[in-house]
Image 1 (tube, rainbow, N blue to C red):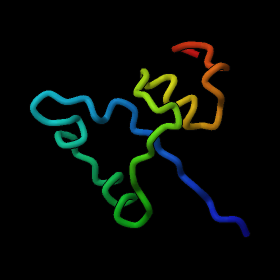
Image 2 (cartoon, one colour):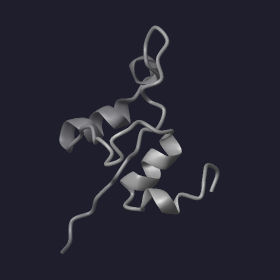
Image 3 (cartoon, one colour):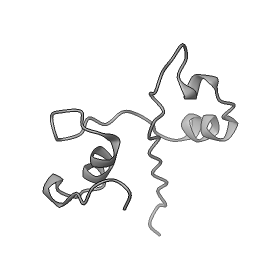
Amino acid sequence: MPKSVLFIILDGIADATEKTPLQLASKPNLDILTKNGFSGLIENKLGEHPDSGLSTFVLLGYEKEDYPGRGY
């Protein structure tokens, strides 16, 4: 039987003032998922740091040229 995968993209989680939203949040469920699974950072293949819409689009396997813009 194939294994299930839960793929979570925490878009905006690195926004920071004094502390990041992740540091300020109560996140017991996310803590459990992280403790019992795998977590990490992924560098996009664009070699630059565009807006998060394009980054997420490429992370999901699409080509940069096919990006229709934010809001879709």
